[in-house]
Length: 345
Image (cartoon, rainbow, N blue to C red):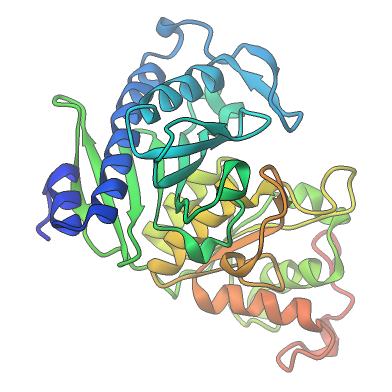
């Protein structure tokens, strides 16, 4: 398909006369339409009200901002007019039944990175589209990521972008703010492999397991260490912004489990954060893992299940998996570096 095609045309050409695909296309287009409204709200900042005000907690105990609620309501209302039978959101305790007879389920993080609302850092929306396939209620979204029919990630930043996969590669669309329409700007996203860049919150170093400390120690050691190369570190604390950078430049993102209360099983959510991002990443030639398992193969057990999440260039993700398998027997790690640490010389 040609660059600058509209999202609508892109979806119509993909769906053709296939009824199941048409349902997916209609759902994705509806989500994109609601995202245009969310982008407009975010673009107004304080002029649209006190969007960063904490108004309560979501179903999983995280602070809920005013914009979290408004974004959730926009996407929920939009889904009522689509073939979506089940709608599951980070902001809801349980999945909601919308349209009897609908063929699809949607799991969504309406506003990822909402802690950054008042700092003018990019935030976004992450969504997953799944088949109902005879399932009912919340079980419809508790499917392995391999069952996803479509997944997307919107970033509300200097540009508003939509990264979308329909299972045939990952494409990037950019919002034309004048006309309120998304247009195709990168038909075939491929994650670059050579970038020496990693994103992690290094302040939690002391809480990580040995495998993760070893991996980061070797990056920090640079040309003097077993990797034999210098690395740059990045940390935006906005999952969609981190993923957007990796789609553009490559590298790796790491949010491991750690020993702090509430972080022992990871922090990001499998169903509506890790699974859709992993689908996008794999379709762009990258990889995604929890440190040991491929993300898309994991069977979810609960809507708000948390999980460690590592994604990016395939070679870098595969190395993290090897460090977790046995950090002491990685051939390229010399005993010289066994006692090095991020904050030790």
